[in-house]
Image 1 (cartoon, rainbow, N blue to C red):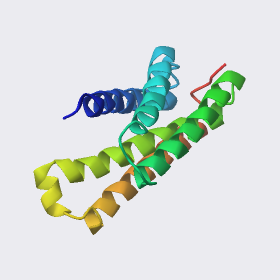
Image 2 (image 1 turned 90 degrees about the horizontal axis):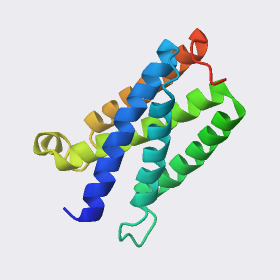
Image 3 (image 1 turned 90 degrees about the vertical axis):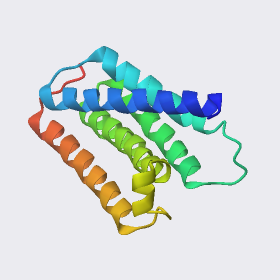
Image 4 (image 1 turned 180 degrees about the horizontal axis):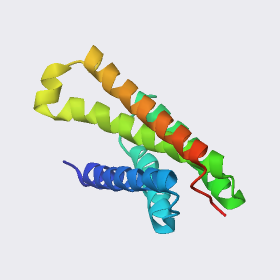
Amino acid sequence: MSTLTLVHVAISLVGIAAGLVVVYGFLTGMRLKGWNWLFLVMTILTSVTGFFFPIHKVTPGIVLGVISLIVLGLALLALKNGWTKTYIITCSIAEFLNVLVLIVQLFMKIPALHALAPTGNEPITAVCKLVALVLFAVLAWLAIRKKAFVLV
């Protein structure tokens, strides 16, 4: 594993873990300022380091990286302006995108999972991605509906 890959994966995993804590904070009303910044910084670094890999064409990973940076830019804007609902939604989307890439990588790199989905297009991968999407959408909706988390 190259140094770039190792750093990228480590940053990604820290970002995902911090993102789960942030989503928990949304649901419980705990601001967790340090965790929010850790999530934002690590998730931005995840997208940025992804662009350093020697890729010579547009790939799904590149597209997700661009989308993630746009979403994270909106999250930072929401954080600066105290837009709680926008912040919850954008952070939930960014965390979903991180988890989406994690799901794809797990099916590519873990032999037992790769055996279930050797091409990455099998129904089991779609189900896992859909479960992640629904999970983060529901959690964001619950957090907004609960009105427990406030930025200001």
